[in-house]
Image 1 (cartoon, rainbow, N blue to C red):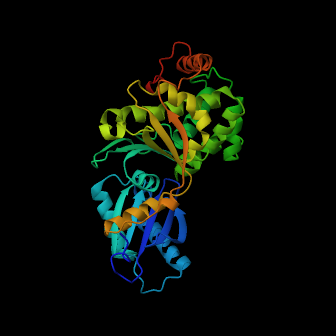
Image 2: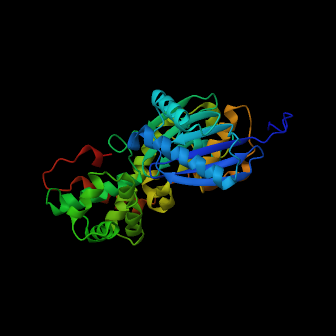
Length: 379
C-alpha cells in the first residue's frame, strides 16, 4: 500500500542501486513507482575496491539522482536499497551501510543485499525462484517461498566465478599462453583465438596483456574480452565454441548444486521453476546452450528461464520501499524476456552435436602427451 493510500499527502522517494563487478546503476522512484532519475557509476563491489571507494561511488550515484530529478536540498530519500555484488557477509554489509550514512547521509534508511536479490525482486514479484548470474563474475542463489536460501558460487575470481565472462576470458588467455610456451599444446587450431585475444587487448604480443592482470588488476577489462571469444564461436571456430560450451556446463553445475533445496511449492510451478539469468554472458545463449543442457543432472526439474533486459536497480528500489512498509507497483518496470523452457523429457542435445562436444572435451583433457589433466578440465 502506498503512502498516499495510507492517507499521507507528502511525496516519498526510494532509491535503488544495482552494483555489478564492472559497473553500477541507480534509479530513483516515487511512491507511484514513476522513474524520476537514473545514474551510473563504476563497480560497487567492496571486496574489489574497498568500503571507502564503494561508499563514494554509491554517494555519487545518489547525488546524481537528486540532481537529475531536481530534488530540493531538504527533500529526504526515505530508503536506499543496495543490491551489490559481493554483499554476502553481514558484518561487512553493516560496515558499508554505516560508512555510507556517517560520511554522506544519502537516505533516511537503508537495506542491503547481494546483487542476486535485486535481480529477483525486479523479475519476480513473489521474490521466489533462482537467480543465476554470469556477468563479470558468476553466482547462483535460490530463494524459497518461506524465505530460506541456498547459494552456490559468488566467491570472486580467486575462488569461484566459473562460467563467468572473467572465467571465459582468462581460460582463453591461459590456453594461448600455455600453447605458445609449449607447456600444454592445444589440439584445437589456436589461430582464431589468438587473433581475438590480441585484437581485443590491442596488443601485438602476449607480454603486453600482463598489465591487465597485474598492478593494477583490471578484472572488468579482462572480462569484457569474453564477447570477443563469443564472436569467434559464432564464426565457427571450434576452440572459441568449446570455451562457451564449457562455460555453459559450469553454469549448469550451479543449478545442480541447489536443486535438492528447491521447495515443493516451487517445484509445482506450472511453467517450471523460474530461473532469472543475469549478466552479459547470457546474451550468447546459443553458444552456452549445448553445454548447459548437457550438464544438467537428471534430478533438475523443469525450468522457466528468464533474462533481465534492463537494470535490477528497480528491484533494489522495490526492496527499499518494502523496508519502510511500502509496496511499490513496479510491474511496468519488470524488463524480462522468457527465453527458454527446459524439461528433461523434451530438451535433448542432438546426438551428432553431442559426439562432437565429447570429442572436443577429450581433446582438451588429453592436451599434452602423457600430461595429467587438471581438475578443472575434467568436469
